[in-house]
Length: 385
Ligand SMILES: Cc1cc2nc3c(=O)[nH]c(=O)nc-3n(C[C@H](O)[C@H](O)[C@H](O)COP(=O)(O)OP(=O)(O)OC[C@H]3O[C@@H](n4cnc5c(N)ncnc54)[C@H](O)[C@@H]3O)c2cc1C
Image 1 (cartoon, rainbow, N blue to C red):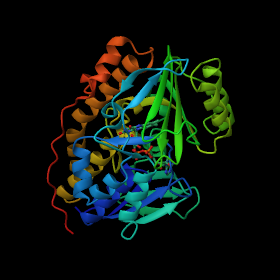
Image 2 (spheres, helix red, strand yellow):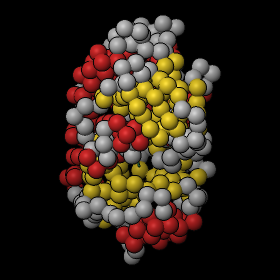
Image 3 (cartoon, rainbow, N blue to C red):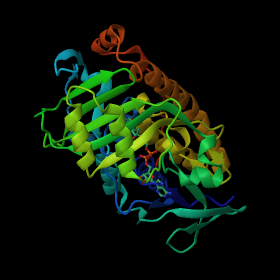
């Protein structure tokens, strides 16, 4: 068998660039195609837990990541009249280390751009596999051929749709929607945040970028799902505003800020459930194949570790993609299953109802039992360079 050389990766956020990094170190030639015209910011903060820090260390990026730590302290739970009634320890929401989501793709891009081909502003349009490779057409660029294709293009993955089937078959809605936007730090928050919860909804605001600005979020329950246009931001803002009309605390101010916000994110909290992540020469990585949902707090770690394992198994198997994809699934499946259970529990127990005293007491103890998962044992794959 000819060893695999060229790998096309769709999506340049976390999983995609991390995979490209490891593939290059193992002697493969990765190309990344990203639909956005440049690296995306994403607004919210993401945290890392456990072995993801080990992967970042093996990539030589741990010190740089640590320097970007939001350094978030404990946050305040506020009532409708603006009085603090509980404290939420930072360990609960900021993991072992927390950075703004946009910082991570930027850092991974800097670590890979000299060795890896990046194509921004394009998307794979069609994939056709044969015994020797995959013929790919793009929405804009000329057709090309690769040995393998990896879908690292997130919850709404194009590669999953092209190679496995429509989104409805694999995406499981957790019954919660989230809107996130940027705003001035009008509360003068210093490395902290405030949270407000009412039955079926929660809002928060955290300081960001060394307290020079702030990020706010509205979360609300909609168990039956919502019918809306994923490209229509004005409609999404109206939906979120409708859910929070009449609420107390800082909500009226936040609603006005959301209306004016330039950076705005809106999506369902969802998981991706698939029987297999591989279809011939195409494989899924990160949220595209195994999204555990924001309520798991594990998606970034999962993307980084999955990238390390997939590249390592491809190297180990000498490019035999069948053996490598099977080994990658074997290693990642138990870890993903645990995170998905965590994501479902997080949605049911901590998000939908207003927090009970029991939940508040548990959170205040700083080590909620729901946040503990079995560590994944990282195998040592010998990089060729
Ligand atoms: C509100 C929120 C809060 C979160 N909080 C946390 C947290 O605290 N801790 C944590 O670990 N995780 C958290 N997550 C999850 C985390 O962001 C994801 O698990 C992680 O970003 C997954 O990385 P990924 O690279 O697989 O996918 P994504 O980050 O979703 O990236 C997909 C990339 O693919 C690109 N793309 C999409 N379609 C195409 C296409 N057709 N062609 C080319 N490119 C395409 C996108 O532009 C994007 O750059 C949170 C998620 C959300 C939504």
